[in-house]
Length: 259
Image 1 (cartoon, rainbow, N blue to C red):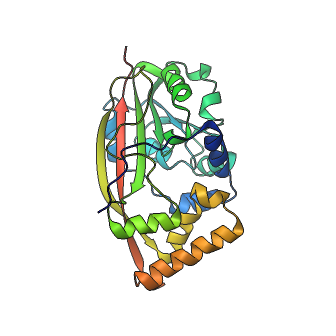
Image 2 (cartoon, helix red, strand yellow):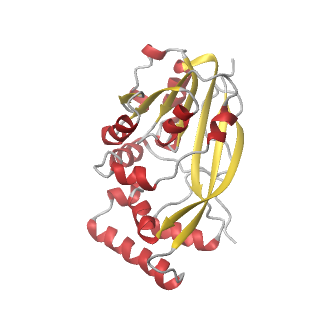
């Protein structure tokens, strides 16, 4: 039986930069089409305050920004990948988008004004000390910082093997809080178990949105597609027209200033 890692993956500054740059791709629409969105209940868990200003760090194509907007929040979306933010701006022009790494973000225009700051599927790409300081600069005195991430549920053996083929491993120990600075109180977490339904071709497309794939050579990519095709169609016995139910766990963590 597979046991999830209890150690977060530690990424060097160079690794974060290289893999983060991989997401500035002309395939942003593909990413937006196959990556899952977020439940409204996550926003309700993070804060029970009336909607105000929310800042979405590492917003990408706006998967979490869309949930915030639907819940009545005014959203500022920050991401270093211009192509990703362009998808968000096209679909939700009411959102303020800023092309910037979080570590380099000018926080002055929103200093201590944000009622909610969120990093969804992004905190592992951000330097912990620098990112924590930026969040402190942005949050109001009563504001909430939320870290949210989806993970494919690799506690299930066939799913674990699927993730190895797609190079989509555990980024966070799902039951452990994210690393933040001592400027925050102890995080409080909640979890959701759910499934994403994808066709066979969409599973290939999901693999194509992973950082490893985006940085791989054409030869490596072809091998990944060959392995995935064999696994889904021959080993697991799906038909090309089948729908595959991929189990996920979503973790959300909320925290406030320590003082």
